[in-house]
Structure formats: C-alpha cells, structure tokens
Image (cartoon, rainbow, N blue to C red; front, side):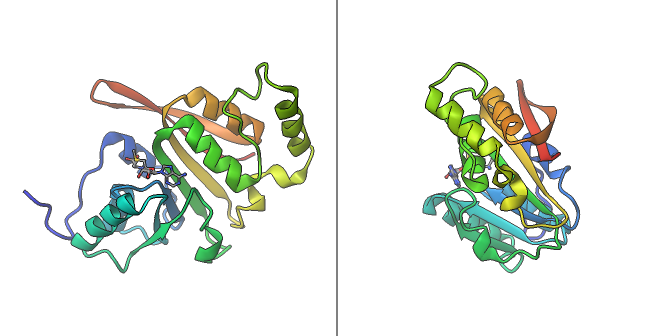
Length: 205
Ligand SMILES: C[S@@+](CC[C@H](N)C(=O)[O-])C[C@H]1O[C@@H](n2cnc3c(N)ncnc32)[C@H](O)[C@@H]1O
C-alpha cells in the first residue's frame, strides 16, 4: 500500500523524537538524509523554515529525491550532495534564521568527524580525554586556545545553531567530542522496539 501524497507519514520513534526538538521557524539541515523521512515529515507538518536534505552519496540522495517527489514536496525540500556540511555555505541561509542541524543514524565517530570538519576542530576517533599520542593532544589544545574553535565560526545564524545528533554506536565518543568543542549537550533516550537509542541536543554554551 502506498501513502497518498500529502498525507502525513509517521516517523520511526527515533526520528520523531528528534523532530520534536526542531524549532518552528528554523532552517533544518538533515545531514545523511538517505530516505528523507525527517524533512518530508516536517514539510507535511507545516514546518515554515527551509528544509534541506543532504547526503554524501548520489544513491541515497536519489532515493530522497524520489520520496520527496512522490509526496509532491519538491518545491518545499531542497537537496544537496554534500560530504557532511561542506555545502552549507553555498545554501545562503539567512543569518537571522535559527539553524537546526540533524545528523542521525550514523556512528558516533562519523558524526563527530562531520562536526569537527564543520567547526575546524579535530576529532581523532580516540577519546580526547584519554591517553593518546602527544601530537593529537597538543593539536586539540591549540584549537582550544583559539576562539576559532566554537561553532559560531561556521554557524552564522545570529539566533544560534543547534545540533540534533543521534548516534547508532559509540555515543560516548561523540559526547567527549561535544565537550571538547565546548558545546552543551542535553542527553535523551528513545525506545524503538527493543532498542534504546541515545540522542543529544547540543548548542553553544
Ligand atoms: C543509515 S543512513 C541514516 C538515514 C537517516 N538519517 C536516519 O537516521 O534514518 C546514513 C546516511 O548517511 C550518509 N552519510 C554517511 N556519511 C556521510 C557524510 N559524511 N556526509 C553526508 N552523508 C553521509 C549515508 O550515505 C547514508 O545515506
């Protein structure tokens, strides 16, 4: 049975939980969108801000495009082929708009690496608090000593960026990274079937 166009589609609890944290007027970037269920749901719920579905791979992005077109939302949801957030600048998002960045359904280390690239920080896939090579520790300290570290460098929204992050694995690595880049992270859990997922809503302190 297919879902008639325009009819709200329910989301898996994991994505629904994230959707509930999205600010009503925010521009929403769904990094690693794959099927684009989250932006589709938001569009169908009447979200007023821009909705951007990004993926690194053409296959998932084509799937997103098809799902969006079938629901006649092509004029509502933008698509971008992008490794992490590298195409964000080219989207010319109004700096007076709040920006909500969603990264869900990937490993915690991949999410941290995407954020690190975006912020100009370092993520070495090793706990930044634990024993590691002197070089990686000192490079983190160098970044820490610089104002350049903090997300507003690339987060140009005067109303702030929020990061809605749902790691499938290694959540603790992601949490360590968020602390190291001085983002405040609220921690939540959501159950889906027998599995309990952790997710984080992170923002500048
Ligand atoms: C398992 S799917 C998750 C889909 C959806 N976000 C969810 O939570 O259900 C992971 C998606 O992330 C994409 N991805 C992986 N690394 C990425 C990166 N660095 N930048 C953008 N997308 C990436 C993959 O191509 C894939 O489509």
